[in-house]
Length: 266
Image (cartoon, rainbow, N blue to C red; front, side):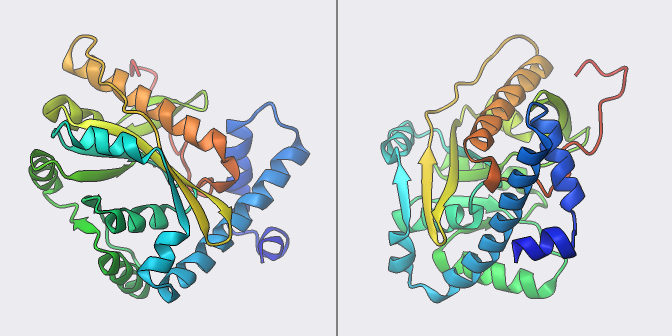
């Protein structure tokens, strides 16, 4: 299916190739094409695993995901500050979110309605089945602050384009990328703990979910300087995740959609 996609129906293939060239200028044309083909295969696997998840019992699903460094999460939970998961569209991100409630992790995620009513219904039903908390984008800040005050967990997908004023330009794969400043702003205000977390596939329908040590918040000066510095730190953490398993990231997304204006300091 991935071969057919690449050769006969090249939807967004040019974008995947272009993004890979930007991120890995040191790789040869042959290496870039091979990585792009593996990436297309990853999207096919995502579709198959979405269907697969609907056929598994919750116990069967739980047994297909190995969690590394679980103790880091429980130590952070003891601090009673609330936890912000820093994550990306890496591996099977839907599986990552879905497995959390099965380990009594009080995870909530911000959800935006999909354009397709059919996909919206299917995905929402699956998320509710496993017990995920869903946050509406409208007035989400108050909801998130309330959750963190009660030591709950909120997941942040941090690897998508976000134009100013909601975003700022920071480095990502040695290129300026418009990135949300919402996570840094939340930590500045709440002192919540930021835990990097990501998934990667070991086989079709088999995942590893890895938790990394907390990222301390850096206070370097003014509010704006703090936001910029910490957003950059989070961006580098995401880049580190992607570099571990580049074939399983969302290269089909236009991450470098725009560039900062010449007058912008960042």
